[in-house]
Image (spheres, rainbow, N blue to C red):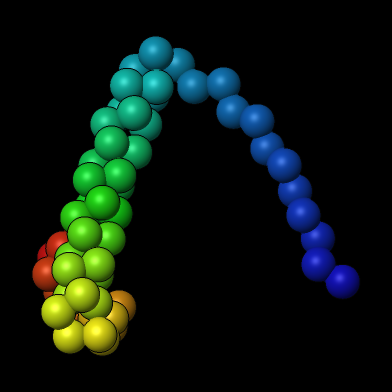
Length: 59
């Protein structure tokens, strides 16, 4: 059996700003890696591995 929990947070204004900045950065990395995957798939029919994506976009 798997348990599931729901949490609700009430961040302060400063925390809201930092969370918005964090999620904006995450969205940019996601979009860039998705575009890379789509481009490589069109060219080579192979999807890059997770380690390749991490080396290219995260580090």
